Length: 165
Image (cartoon, rainbow, N blue to C red; front, side, top):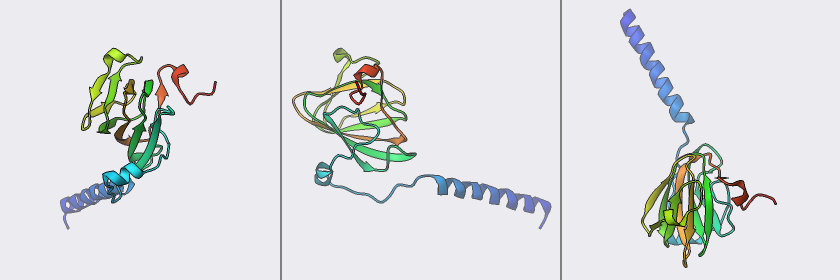
């Protein structure tokens, strides 16, 4: 084998080793499928990424939002809920599955900035980007997907419903 062939073989082996090492350490999605009826029957699990609001139930349906890697959650939000401005670690994408979600961006809850998002609407929650939401007379279910770990930090700590007073 010539020096060039040896060098090409060595570089190729190093590159392949790097690719396999990345693949081995990258979280993999499991095989998963749920019907709308199965998702509706899922019980709340709680966990990072929810607002802490008692009118919001978090159902982890895939992955673990407290750990690195992909996750999916259902937010089941009761009627007449108001969620103060907060943000999360990591980019998130929301899809409205049921009801009419009223969602806005900014560091303070502002009803004038709420956008009405009917079923099928998609929106983003950029990492560290403050946002707020509310529901009307009907319950809302939102599918949230992202890469963990995530958390919830209120822009005004006094608005955090989980804070001990």
